[in-house]
Length: 353
Ligand code: ADE
Image (cartoon, rainbow, N blue to C red; front, side, top):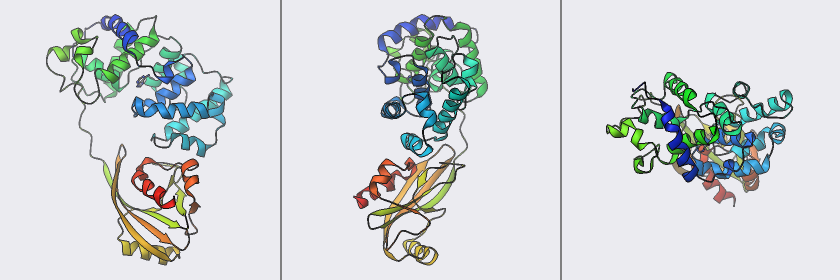
């Protein structure tokens, strides 16, 4: 890597470009730290276009830190349904409660205090401090890692903590004292829409093109470098849509671990045939099975695990006692069912209609 490049050369082109090209996004309408914070948490792992409707709905339901602090868990998870990484929602609430209790409901304005709130790491603290409070602190996310590793021609693994730290240090020295908000968002925005995460970067639109060493040396395919990850664990499951007179069976997941406290369709941790499903429900759950219809396979990828599922629609004389029996409306409005079940959820909606 070209260690000695002075990153202050990035400031003016980034600011000028941001002023002209920034997207109008709902969380850019003001500098309310609550707005910036919630948007940044939602934007971790999720694209801007997907986040916008979630963000709008969240702010309508919970317009203040106080409202978030007081929300019950189920409606909070319902607002987050489909975004994934549900601990992010729980941590948002923990932090909101801490702000109510320790800071009189006022979002703290300095980096260190922001960083000490639950669920807020270096990136988010830097983003909120620089965007909402004008502090000259860096915010290095995946977008910024990509831009900087290319500009500096760094072949280091961008997933390494030491690389992120190094970029943070470089930026800390060169962050402008004025316009911190535009600079942070400009760097992120270049990474999001010019130096794009998937596909060919749009170098002809990039304000940093003339400074970019990876582009000068034809290295855009190999930078940013990420070391290969170890393969995900595969878990096989059978998912059962157990229906009886327009009601379906769901249950709450345990309050620890993957998808904690969300609701799910009954499932087993191995594949079952249609006959085995019938036998399991009749012998072990004491209901009469009227029909078993195979629904085919589905796959869901989490960060460390993949679920490979087969599914069945089962009509029974009653919903087995251990489950909640819910109608279509309640499934839609009340219980958060994670995206992992999406393929079967659609089918159930048709059956319950
Ligand atoms: N991705 C992460 N933070 C962002 C922001 N503030 N604007 C646009 N994309 C982002």
